[in-house]
Length: 366
Image 1 (tube, rainbow, N blue to C red):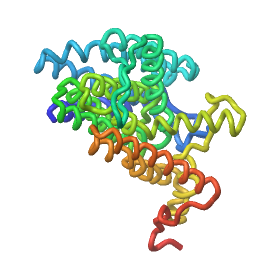
Image 2 (image 1 turned 60 degrees about the horizontal axis):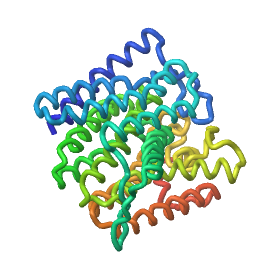
Image 3 (image 1 turned 90 degrees about the vertical axis):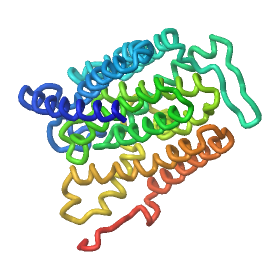
Image 4 (image 1 turned 120 degrees about the vertical axis):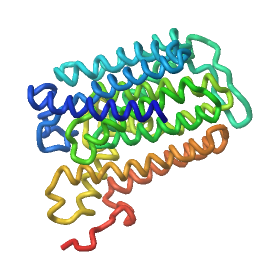
Protein backbone atom coordinates (compact mmCIF):
# COMPACT_ATOMS: atom_id res chain seq x y z
CA UNK A 1 0.00 0.00 0.00
CA UNK A 2 3.07 2.27 0.02
CA UNK A 3 2.47 3.15 -3.63
CA UNK A 4 -1.18 3.95 -2.98
CA UNK A 5 -0.36 6.24 -0.04
CA UNK A 6 2.41 8.15 -1.84
CA UNK A 7 0.25 8.62 -4.93
CA UNK A 8 -2.71 9.74 -2.81
CA UNK A 9 -0.78 12.39 -0.88
CA UNK A 10 0.98 13.62 -4.00
CA UNK A 11 -2.26 14.00 -5.96
CA UNK A 12 -4.16 15.62 -3.07
CA UNK A 13 -1.49 18.34 -2.84
CA UNK A 14 -1.11 18.81 -6.59
CA UNK A 15 -4.88 18.98 -7.10
CA UNK A 16 -5.17 21.73 -4.48
CA UNK A 17 -2.44 23.66 -6.27
CA UNK A 18 -4.21 23.22 -9.64
CA UNK A 19 -7.53 24.41 -8.17
CA UNK A 20 -5.96 27.60 -6.86
CA UNK A 21 -3.95 28.16 -10.02
CA UNK A 22 -6.95 27.69 -12.32
CA UNK A 23 -9.14 30.07 -10.32
CA UNK A 24 -6.44 32.69 -10.08
CA UNK A 25 -5.64 32.61 -13.79
CA UNK A 26 -9.02 31.59 -15.20
CA UNK A 27 -7.43 28.56 -16.86
CA UNK A 28 -9.45 25.61 -18.21
CA UNK A 29 -12.63 26.55 -16.36
CA UNK A 30 -15.86 24.75 -17.23
CA UNK A 31 -18.29 27.67 -17.41
CA UNK A 32 -20.77 26.01 -19.78
CA UNK A 33 -23.10 24.86 -17.04
CA UNK A 34 -26.23 25.30 -19.15
CA UNK A 35 -25.31 22.38 -21.40
CA UNK A 36 -27.55 19.29 -21.53
CA UNK A 37 -24.89 17.22 -19.77
CA UNK A 38 -23.80 19.85 -17.23
CA UNK A 39 -25.04 19.63 -13.66
CA UNK A 40 -23.22 22.42 -11.87
CA UNK A 41 -24.03 26.09 -11.29
CA UNK A 42 -20.64 27.84 -11.34
CA UNK A 43 -17.31 27.80 -13.16
CA UNK A 44 -15.08 24.88 -12.14
CA UNK A 45 -11.56 23.88 -13.18
CA UNK A 46 -11.79 20.84 -15.44
CA UNK A 47 -8.14 19.76 -15.57
CA UNK A 48 -8.15 17.12 -12.82
CA UNK A 49 -6.31 14.81 -15.19
CA UNK A 50 -3.14 16.91 -14.88
CA UNK A 51 -2.47 16.29 -11.15
CA UNK A 52 -3.57 12.66 -11.50
CA UNK A 53 -1.10 11.99 -14.30
CA UNK A 54 1.73 13.86 -12.58
CA UNK A 55 1.11 11.94 -9.36
CA UNK A 56 1.11 8.62 -11.20
CA UNK A 57 4.33 9.63 -12.96
CA UNK A 58 6.09 10.68 -9.75
CA UNK A 59 4.98 7.62 -7.80
CA UNK A 60 5.89 5.32 -10.69
CA UNK A 61 9.43 6.70 -10.69
CA UNK A 62 9.68 6.08 -6.95
CA UNK A 63 8.26 2.56 -7.34
CA UNK A 64 10.66 1.81 -10.19
CA UNK A 65 13.60 2.88 -8.03
CA UNK A 66 12.38 0.54 -5.27
CA UNK A 67 11.67 -2.28 -7.77
CA UNK A 68 13.78 -1.71 -10.94
CA UNK A 69 12.01 -4.49 -12.86
CA UNK A 70 8.78 -2.46 -12.84
CA UNK A 71 10.30 0.35 -14.89
CA UNK A 72 10.49 -1.77 -18.04
CA UNK A 73 6.69 -2.08 -18.01
CA UNK A 74 5.52 1.18 -16.42
CA UNK A 75 7.56 3.46 -18.71
CA UNK A 76 6.05 2.33 -22.04
CA UNK A 77 2.57 2.09 -20.49
CA UNK A 78 2.68 5.71 -19.31
CA UNK A 79 4.11 6.79 -22.66
CA UNK A 80 1.09 5.24 -24.39
CA UNK A 81 -1.23 6.78 -21.79
CA UNK A 82 0.15 10.23 -22.67
CA UNK A 83 -1.13 9.76 -26.20
CA UNK A 84 -4.54 8.64 -24.95
CA UNK A 85 -4.99 11.65 -22.68
CA UNK A 86 -3.44 14.24 -25.03
CA UNK A 87 -6.64 14.92 -26.93
CA UNK A 88 -8.62 15.16 -23.71
CA UNK A 89 -6.19 17.64 -22.15
CA UNK A 90 -6.28 19.86 -25.24
CA UNK A 91 -10.08 19.64 -25.20
CA UNK A 92 -10.13 20.66 -21.53
CA UNK A 93 -8.08 23.78 -22.32
CA UNK A 94 -9.55 24.75 -25.69
CA UNK A 95 -12.85 22.92 -26.17
CA UNK A 96 -11.93 22.35 -29.80
CA UNK A 97 -11.09 18.64 -30.05
CA UNK A 98 -13.92 16.53 -31.44
CA UNK A 99 -14.93 13.21 -29.82
CA UNK A 100 -13.83 11.39 -33.00
CA UNK A 101 -10.29 12.78 -32.77
CA UNK A 102 -10.06 11.92 -29.07
CA UNK A 103 -11.20 8.39 -29.82
CA UNK A 104 -8.62 8.08 -32.60
CA UNK A 105 -5.87 9.12 -30.19
CA UNK A 106 -6.91 6.46 -27.68
CA UNK A 107 -6.92 3.91 -30.49
CA UNK A 108 -3.43 5.02 -31.47
CA UNK A 109 -2.31 4.65 -27.84
CA UNK A 110 -3.78 1.13 -27.71
CA UNK A 111 -1.98 0.32 -30.96
CA UNK A 112 1.38 1.35 -29.47
CA UNK A 113 0.65 -0.68 -26.32
CA UNK A 114 -0.17 -3.66 -28.56
CA UNK A 115 3.37 -3.66 -29.91
CA UNK A 116 5.38 -2.21 -27.01
CA UNK A 117 3.76 -4.22 -24.20
CA UNK A 118 2.28 -7.13 -26.06
CA UNK A 119 -1.12 -6.04 -24.72
CA UNK A 120 -3.32 -8.07 -27.04
CA UNK A 121 -6.47 -10.14 -26.69
CA UNK A 122 -5.24 -13.62 -27.66
CA UNK A 123 -7.91 -15.81 -26.06
CA UNK A 124 -11.51 -15.95 -24.95
CA UNK A 125 -12.42 -18.21 -22.05
CA UNK A 126 -15.61 -20.24 -22.34
CA UNK A 127 -17.26 -22.57 -19.79
CA UNK A 128 -16.21 -25.63 -21.82
CA UNK A 129 -12.71 -24.50 -22.79
CA UNK A 130 -10.55 -21.77 -24.26
CA UNK A 131 -11.01 -20.18 -27.67
CA UNK A 132 -7.58 -19.03 -28.92
CA UNK A 133 -7.41 -15.90 -31.06
CA UNK A 134 -4.38 -16.15 -33.32
CA UNK A 135 -5.17 -14.19 -36.48
CA UNK A 136 -3.64 -10.69 -36.24
CA UNK A 137 -6.33 -9.30 -38.53
CA UNK A 138 -8.82 -10.15 -35.79
CA UNK A 139 -6.73 -9.66 -32.66
CA UNK A 140 -5.35 -6.22 -33.53
CA UNK A 141 -8.63 -4.35 -34.27
CA UNK A 142 -10.44 -6.18 -31.46
CA UNK A 143 -7.78 -5.18 -28.93
CA UNK A 144 -7.57 -1.57 -30.09
CA UNK A 145 -11.34 -1.11 -30.10
CA UNK A 146 -11.72 -2.73 -26.67
CA UNK A 147 -9.12 -0.52 -24.95
CA UNK A 148 -10.24 2.66 -26.72
CA UNK A 149 -13.84 1.80 -25.94
CA UNK A 150 -13.15 1.53 -22.21
CA UNK A 151 -11.29 4.85 -22.21
CA UNK A 152 -14.23 6.50 -23.94
CA UNK A 153 -16.68 4.72 -21.62
CA UNK A 154 -15.11 6.19 -18.48
CA UNK A 155 -15.44 9.62 -20.07
CA UNK A 156 -19.13 8.98 -20.73
CA UNK A 157 -19.97 8.07 -17.11
CA UNK A 158 -18.07 11.13 -15.86
CA UNK A 159 -21.28 13.09 -15.36
CA UNK A 160 -21.45 13.84 -11.63
CA UNK A 161 -19.09 14.62 -8.80
CA UNK A 162 -17.25 11.48 -7.76
CA UNK A 163 -19.03 9.12 -10.15
CA UNK A 164 -16.32 8.08 -12.61
CA UNK A 165 -13.50 8.46 -10.08
CA UNK A 166 -15.06 6.29 -7.34
CA UNK A 167 -16.18 3.63 -9.81
CA UNK A 168 -12.65 3.59 -11.25
CA UNK A 169 -11.08 3.30 -7.79
CA UNK A 170 -13.22 0.24 -7.04
CA UNK A 171 -12.21 -1.35 -10.33
CA UNK A 172 -8.53 -0.56 -9.80
CA UNK A 173 -8.58 -2.02 -6.29
CA UNK A 174 -10.18 -5.16 -7.71
CA UNK A 175 -7.39 -5.40 -10.28
CA UNK A 176 -4.82 -4.98 -7.50
CA UNK A 177 -6.46 -7.74 -5.44
CA UNK A 178 -6.56 -10.25 -8.29
CA UNK A 179 -3.01 -9.32 -9.33
CA UNK A 180 -1.93 -10.07 -5.76
CA UNK A 181 -3.59 -13.49 -5.95
CA UNK A 182 -1.67 -14.44 -9.08
CA UNK A 183 1.58 -12.69 -8.15
CA UNK A 184 1.56 -10.07 -10.92
CA UNK A 185 3.54 -7.28 -9.24
CA UNK A 186 3.44 -4.92 -12.22
CA UNK A 187 -0.36 -4.81 -12.40
CA UNK A 188 -0.61 -4.77 -8.60
CA UNK A 189 1.67 -1.75 -8.13
CA UNK A 190 0.37 0.18 -11.14
CA UNK A 191 -3.28 -0.32 -10.16
CA UNK A 192 -2.53 0.90 -6.62
CA UNK A 193 -0.65 3.94 -7.97
CA UNK A 194 -3.52 4.98 -10.26
CA UNK A 195 -6.12 4.25 -7.55
CA UNK A 196 -4.18 6.35 -5.03
CA UNK A 197 -3.92 9.30 -7.41
CA UNK A 198 -7.62 9.07 -8.25
CA UNK A 199 -8.48 9.00 -4.54
CA UNK A 200 -6.31 12.09 -3.96
CA UNK A 201 -8.29 13.87 -6.67
CA UNK A 202 -11.60 12.58 -5.31
CA UNK A 203 -11.36 14.41 -1.97
CA UNK A 204 -11.51 17.72 -3.87
CA UNK A 205 -14.10 16.56 -6.38
CA UNK A 206 -16.66 14.97 -4.06
CA UNK A 207 -19.04 16.18 -2.80
CA UNK A 208 -18.51 19.90 -3.50
CA UNK A 209 -16.93 19.68 -6.96
CA UNK A 210 -13.99 22.07 -6.59
CA UNK A 211 -12.41 20.48 -9.67
CA UNK A 212 -13.59 18.16 -12.44
CA UNK A 213 -11.84 15.13 -13.89
CA UNK A 214 -12.08 16.54 -17.38
CA UNK A 215 -11.68 14.64 -20.63
CA UNK A 216 -7.95 14.28 -20.06
CA UNK A 217 -8.39 12.65 -16.67
CA UNK A 218 -11.22 10.40 -17.85
CA UNK A 219 -9.29 9.18 -20.90
CA UNK A 220 -6.15 8.60 -18.84
CA UNK A 221 -7.91 6.58 -16.13
CA UNK A 222 -10.02 4.72 -18.70
CA UNK A 223 -6.98 3.82 -20.78
CA UNK A 224 -5.08 2.60 -17.72
CA UNK A 225 -8.09 0.52 -16.64
CA UNK A 226 -8.40 -1.06 -20.06
CA UNK A 227 -4.70 -1.83 -20.41
CA UNK A 228 -4.24 -3.15 -16.87
CA UNK A 229 -7.29 -5.40 -17.15
CA UNK A 230 -6.08 -6.70 -20.53
CA UNK A 231 -2.52 -7.28 -19.31
CA UNK A 232 -3.65 -9.00 -16.11
CA UNK A 233 -5.85 -11.45 -18.00
CA UNK A 234 -3.44 -12.15 -20.85
CA UNK A 235 -0.33 -12.48 -18.65
CA UNK A 236 -2.12 -14.82 -16.25
CA UNK A 237 -4.12 -17.64 -17.89
CA UNK A 238 -5.66 -18.48 -14.52
CA UNK A 239 -7.66 -15.23 -14.65
CA UNK A 240 -10.75 -15.59 -16.82
CA UNK A 241 -11.25 -13.11 -19.65
CA UNK A 242 -14.78 -12.72 -18.33
CA UNK A 243 -13.31 -11.22 -15.16
CA UNK A 244 -12.22 -8.17 -17.16
CA UNK A 245 -15.53 -8.08 -19.02
CA UNK A 246 -17.63 -8.15 -15.84
CA UNK A 247 -15.33 -5.75 -14.00
CA UNK A 248 -15.67 -3.09 -16.72
CA UNK A 249 -19.23 -3.86 -17.76
CA UNK A 250 -20.90 -0.79 -16.22
CA UNK A 251 -19.06 1.89 -18.25
CA UNK A 252 -18.81 -0.44 -21.26
CA UNK A 253 -22.51 -1.26 -21.42
CA UNK A 254 -23.47 2.35 -20.71
CA UNK A 255 -21.51 3.30 -23.83
CA UNK A 256 -22.94 0.52 -26.00
CA UNK A 257 -26.50 1.20 -24.89
CA UNK A 258 -26.07 4.96 -25.40
CA UNK A 259 -24.85 4.42 -28.95
CA UNK A 260 -27.79 2.07 -29.65
CA UNK A 261 -30.28 4.52 -28.13
CA UNK A 262 -29.00 7.47 -30.13
CA UNK A 263 -28.71 5.65 -33.47
CA UNK A 264 -31.70 3.31 -33.56
CA UNK A 265 -34.19 4.83 -31.11
CA UNK A 266 -33.63 8.54 -31.67
CA UNK A 267 -32.15 8.35 -35.18
CA UNK A 268 -29.20 10.61 -34.34
CA UNK A 269 -25.43 10.41 -34.39
CA UNK A 270 -23.97 8.20 -31.63
CA UNK A 271 -21.47 11.00 -30.90
CA UNK A 272 -24.22 13.55 -30.21
CA UNK A 273 -24.49 14.23 -26.45
CA UNK A 274 -27.81 13.83 -24.69
CA UNK A 275 -29.15 13.99 -21.15
CA UNK A 276 -30.72 10.56 -20.81
CA UNK A 277 -27.88 8.40 -19.56
CA UNK A 278 -28.81 6.25 -16.58
CA UNK A 279 -27.01 8.64 -14.21
CA UNK A 280 -28.84 11.62 -15.76
CA UNK A 281 -32.22 9.95 -15.29
CA UNK A 282 -31.45 9.10 -11.67
CA UNK A 283 -30.51 12.74 -11.10
CA UNK A 284 -33.68 14.12 -12.66
CA UNK A 285 -36.30 11.57 -11.67
CA UNK A 286 -35.14 10.08 -8.39
CA UNK A 287 -32.72 12.30 -6.49
CA UNK A 288 -34.92 15.38 -6.61
CA UNK A 289 -37.63 13.41 -4.77
CA UNK A 290 -35.33 11.99 -2.11
CA UNK A 291 -34.12 15.32 -0.73
CA UNK A 292 -35.94 17.97 1.25
CA UNK A 293 -37.50 20.98 -0.52
CA UNK A 294 -34.62 23.25 0.42
CA UNK A 295 -31.94 20.80 -0.72
CA UNK A 296 -33.82 20.19 -3.97
CA UNK A 297 -33.01 23.76 -4.93
CA UNK A 298 -29.30 23.11 -4.40
CA UNK A 299 -27.83 21.77 -7.62
CA UNK A 300 -24.59 20.81 -5.86
CA UNK A 301 -26.34 18.66 -3.24
CA UNK A 302 -28.46 16.92 -5.86
CA UNK A 303 -25.34 16.35 -7.94
CA UNK A 304 -23.48 14.78 -5.01
CA UNK A 305 -26.43 12.55 -4.05
CA UNK A 306 -26.64 11.03 -7.52
CA UNK A 307 -23.24 9.33 -7.54
CA UNK A 308 -23.80 6.91 -4.61
CA UNK A 309 -26.68 5.28 -6.52
CA UNK A 310 -24.28 4.44 -9.36
CA UNK A 311 -21.46 3.45 -6.99
CA UNK A 312 -23.70 0.78 -5.51
CA UNK A 313 -25.01 -0.26 -8.91
CA UNK A 314 -21.47 -0.69 -10.28
CA UNK A 315 -20.59 -2.88 -7.29
CA UNK A 316 -23.12 -5.40 -8.64
CA UNK A 317 -20.42 -6.15 -11.19
CA UNK A 318 -17.20 -5.32 -9.34
CA UNK A 319 -17.85 -7.53 -6.29
CA UNK A 320 -18.75 -10.79 -8.11
CA UNK A 321 -15.91 -10.17 -10.59
CA UNK A 322 -13.46 -9.88 -7.70
CA UNK A 323 -14.81 -12.93 -5.87
CA UNK A 324 -15.16 -15.26 -8.88
CA UNK A 325 -12.22 -14.00 -10.97
CA UNK A 326 -11.32 -17.47 -12.28
CA UNK A 327 -14.80 -19.02 -12.65
CA UNK A 328 -15.87 -18.33 -16.23
CA UNK A 329 -19.41 -19.74 -15.97
CA UNK A 330 -20.26 -17.69 -12.88
CA UNK A 331 -18.75 -14.56 -14.40
CA UNK A 332 -20.87 -14.98 -17.53
CA UNK A 333 -23.97 -15.41 -15.37
CA UNK A 334 -23.30 -12.19 -13.45
CA UNK A 335 -22.56 -10.35 -16.70
CA UNK A 336 -25.97 -11.31 -18.07
CA UNK A 337 -27.58 -10.46 -14.72
CA UNK A 338 -26.03 -6.99 -14.78
CA UNK A 339 -27.23 -6.29 -18.32
CA UNK A 340 -30.76 -7.42 -17.49
CA UNK A 341 -30.75 -5.33 -14.31
CA UNK A 342 -29.52 -2.26 -16.19
CA UNK A 343 -32.20 -2.55 -18.90
CA UNK A 344 -34.94 -3.22 -16.34
CA UNK A 345 -33.96 -0.26 -14.17
CA UNK A 346 -33.56 2.07 -17.15
CA UNK A 347 -36.96 1.11 -18.56
CA UNK A 348 -38.67 1.61 -15.19
CA UNK A 349 -37.17 5.07 -14.68
CA UNK A 350 -37.95 6.19 -18.24
CA UNK A 351 -41.58 5.17 -17.77
CA UNK A 352 -41.82 7.00 -14.43
CA UNK A 353 -42.19 3.67 -12.64
CA UNK A 354 -39.01 3.79 -10.59
CA UNK A 355 -38.80 1.11 -7.87
CA UNK A 356 -39.94 2.48 -4.51
CA UNK A 357 -36.80 1.26 -2.75
CA UNK A 358 -34.81 3.84 -4.71
CA UNK A 359 -36.63 6.66 -2.93
CA UNK A 360 -35.01 7.17 0.46
CA UNK A 361 -37.07 10.11 1.70
CA UNK A 362 -35.91 12.44 4.42
CA UNK A 363 -37.83 11.93 7.65
CA UNK A 364 -38.47 15.62 8.13
CA UNK A 365 -39.43 16.39 4.60
CA UNK A 366 -42.36 18.81 4.32
